[in-house]
Image (cartoon, rainbow, N blue to C red):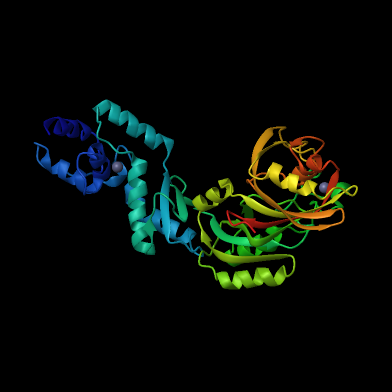
Amino acid sequence: MSERLEIAGRALQRPLCNHCLGRLFASVSRGLTNDQRGAIVRSCLPDGPQQPVSMNDCHVCRGLFSELQKFADISARASEGYEFSTFLVGTKVDAEVLEREEAFWTELGAKETETIKTEMNREIGKLLEKKLGKSVDFANPDMVFLVDTQFDRVVLDVSPLFVYGRYRKFSRELPQTRWICRECRGKGCPRCDGKGRMYDMSVQDYTGPIVMRHAQGEDDFFHGMGREDIDARMLGNGRPFAVEVRRPRKRTLDMPAIEREINDGARGIVEIEGLRMSTRAEMRNLKESTHPKTYRVSVRFQTDFDHGKLNEVVTSLAGKPISQLTPNRVVHRRANLERLRTVRSIRVESVNGSEVVFVVEADSGTYIKELMHGDQGRTQPNVAGIVGVPCEVLELDVIAIGDKGA
Ligand SMILES: [Zn+2]
Ligand SMILES: [Zn+2]
């Protein structure tokens, strides 16, 4: 203790408020505020209790700690109109104050310190907890108050909100997300008929804006667990997705009402179910997960063929790995890679002359159209190759996501 008292004695050769005195020894004991700790240190000095200085004279903070309540009040006012239950405070303190604090520590050789920002954050946080009846959360706050102590300003960092659901898509002309025109980047040009986008609507357009309006947010993003081709329907149990709403003012949402509104507006085109609140972590998980998918795909062979060959298709593909180079149709925008995927099962559902309907369960990321026609040999083996007759894909549907099969 004597070394600490010696540091305290030297520190008090300058005017210091109790906060800035106590912070020199912040890691010595728990359960005290720096303000209380400073008062105790002061009373322990051999020369007897030293009079605390007026806060505004404090060598380090120049009175910043007398403004805590004001910062809490400004923050509370800034957050009016936003629904949130947890928050965190971040403080911006003048560089001058920070430099003074650091130089002072060096001069004193103080090593048990805490930064002024950390104390400001905590103390404003405590005042706000009391004032708002909400609690500080370090990991996942709904709201972060960025308090600029120099200009008495607060910037709100409102955490986005995530809503999870599953969608089915019955249209063969609907992309999953908004597709902004590459040529004009949304401004409108001849390529996009002046619309700024390549398709008028998307699954995102049928869902995101409605969730955003209910949450009174400012922007919406769509995260799918993978995506199907524009011309493929998404049937069965639907595809998991999450809508992200930026800067929401409301976080308690009437999910059944939102679900009804979306389904009424998208009748016959998109259908959603199971809407509920989600988290950023779940959204990340969703985007990274790789579930197998089951497809129904109908193909037409160029000529009649020996139907016995279909047994050969089944035996030579089921449970086997296939090699796929990035398809010709997407290679202009994706790296040309070889992928190995497994066809978990394949069966023939119906045969009508040269038209065949297959049900295929395959690894996530398998290009099904290419598995059928072979993509000029870029997918090996492939159905057309095994049958010995070229074929084209007429229709493709995703009928299940996950290990369910069809
Ligand atoms: Zn001070
Ligand atoms: Zn355009």
